[in-house]
Figure 1 (spheres, helix red, strand yellow):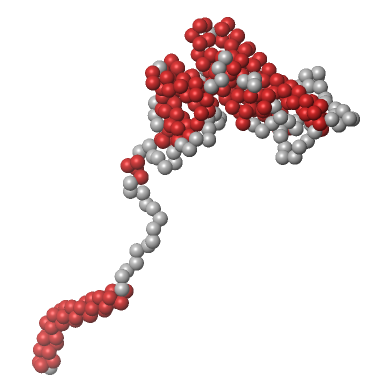
Figure 2 (spheres, one colour; figure 1 turned 135 degrees about the vertical axis):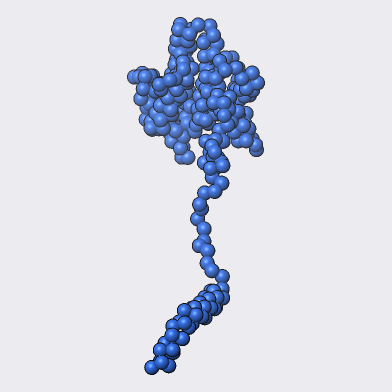
Length: 287
């Protein structure tokens, strides 16, 4: 547990991380032990056993008579055992967390934990109902939500609770809001799964919860948003270098300018040397 609880986590967040870590571990174990359904029908006897304590799952051998109804019954029993093993592990963890909340947190923390426990149960139920594995059908008849809360409508109740939380926006419930946000971030969709505009509604709830928790819009974290947009108004961007239009015209202007300079320089030279020429002429005349 210490390895998955992060520094600064509250009691609720630490319990949520612990629970979700166990969900991921069980999913990985299901995937690596052959409990995932495959496109081809595989006899139950060929499926490897999951690495749970000895005796928890007994190997099933197909009867030599090959009676189809008996094989199907065995397959159903093993699927039920698979679901029960995962279900019992998660139920045990949730019950232990509740005991810890009652023992160390007092009545208020216990009530908050029950709300968080509902979120965890709903998330786990949805994950293992959506997962294509041998125990999925058995899970339908044995929800964590039903066991702990005697209800069968987490897809609706989840968002009713979020609506109530967002309506009051009590700062004391910020950690509970984080639990809801994390559940949505980890894929919980509830009643919006498969709806035409379901993703828009889920995005709305994520944004509102983020705003409630952190007191800012999540847009500020987007690459398209800038904290100080004024600083980006006069940035040098990539562009095409400016070129002189009609270079022939500029060559003509340059030639005219040189001609004018030549005339001016000649006039200046004439003025400067005129007096000198007069003196030279007088000297020549006297000679």
